[in-house]
Image 1 (cartoon, one colour):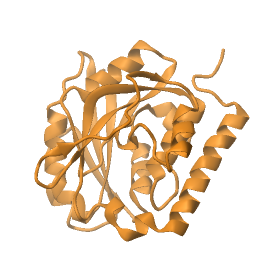
Image 2 (cartoon, rainbow, N blue to C red):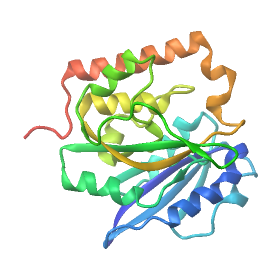
Image 3 (cartoon, rainbow, N blue to C red):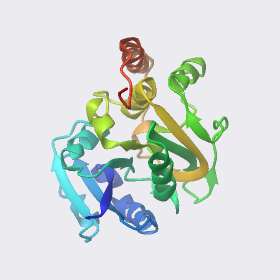
Image 4 (cartoon, rainbow, N blue to C red):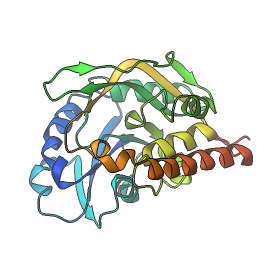
Length: 252
């Protein structure tokens, strides 16, 4: 049986039409012999507007559930994640060629690494792209360094959580994505870094689409009181995981 990478995508009706581009980017991925990908698309809701955009491909599974936000949708999808690794791909984003192979190679080569991230570029409405300043050096990301950077830089991590590739067993042990209305992926990233070493690839791995309907563009996303609360609980979880000295992989 081939070994499997599970691609997890949360989608809601306004972003459903972007699934075609996401699927095209998946089809361009080339994996080593003996590996395959399977795409789990989980609608955050039960509308009739998403299914028509889901590709007709045996490697694609579509499910629906009551709305709770993208973190809830992704975590529900984990019930059907039967691969060793999980890769995040938001419905409106695209992988660049070679991304899955690079992520896989990093973690297969070093079993002390539990997750991988890569460089991301904003994909603007006119089709152009722009990068982010401050990418870390390529290679291992040691425990605690993401939290330290995040706290020192107005709660912005030096690696993008939308590029996450992670060992499924650790993802499940941490409970999936945080139960937050936003920043649930950053909260997961901080928890992963509190418990394990990661990896950063300097090659661009994701085109992060910027468009008017995206959740991070809504005024509620930057509401001061809510943002402060989100950051506080994400930081507290990472600190407590560090204090408990829980590590991945477990020591013999």
